[in-house]
Image (cartoon, rainbow, N blue to C red; front, side):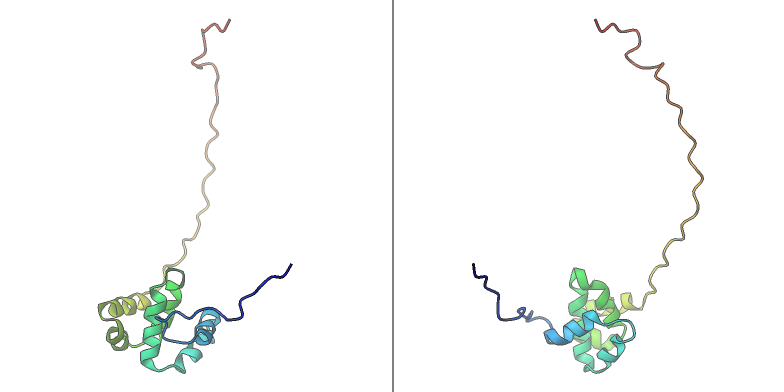
Length: 124
């Protein structure tokens, strides 16, 4: 049995402002490498990429990370009011994770069958 495999790569999204290779680099970059990758992009392309990623639910947080490397004016120029919102959200500090407090053990519940609804009934 012969299996066929596609010979072409993924179809690029026409709305994406960068090539699939650059998008992959941004997606896989760690905290130290991302600023270097973004610095190599023109400011307008970086702002378009931030807005593009922000609009994808699974890449929303990455879009905010890219937006931190953008000027507010660039984001507003490429996306209008949405660019302003993206910039504002990118500048917010992420919420601190809640510190779990040790919970007091719940008191043990007493179980009694004496008050059962079946009491006094005959099941013959």
